[in-house]
Length: 189
Ligand code: AMP
Ligand code: MG
Figure 1 (cartoon, helix red, strand yellow):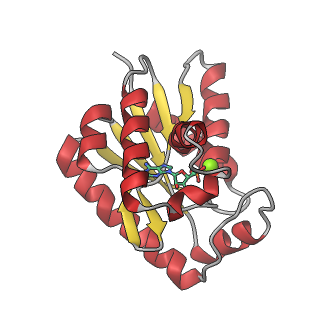
Figure 2 (cartoon, rainbow, N blue to C red):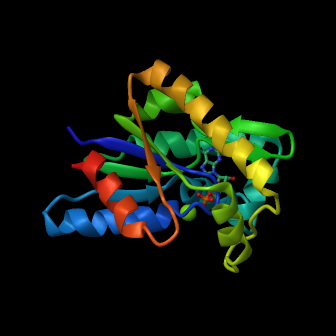
């Protein structure tokens, strides 16, 4: 049986970077994980159906459309065998409020062993978003980012209740990527 680990964090916290760092360390020990991105699964379906042209447009789509894409992505991901690391969001900030990234029907398909929350100081996230030219990140202040991170902790508790998974908090502080990668690798071993 493979391990299913879900990795979450607000946009710009550096999830993908921490994942790459951890997987590099594990590879040296002969431990393999397939790393996949939930948003990419959704985006590929959305592009096929001519719904969006940019992945950052998805969180502003009608809720029903987002849920449909989310459900189809969840079903596809649930079929993947072996050790899987799923890069996604505990909650998605939409114009109509926070949407659960892992609602009950998605969680029951995937049944993760561990959910990781990648966090850091709100002002560090603000700076990272401002300097990321590759994405259309939401423009929001440190207070809004703090609220989103708090909400993610709350909803993660609900996910633990539904699945019996553990919740691991990994801090990705400026200049301490090595530490974050190590902390993530520790739960993946
Ligand atoms: P990312 O590249 O991780 O920022 O994801 C791109 C986009 O995919 C996000 O802005 C969301 O619109 C969507 N997305 C990713 N994961 C989920 C999820 N679990 N539930 C709903 N939407 C998601
Ligand atoms: Mg990412």
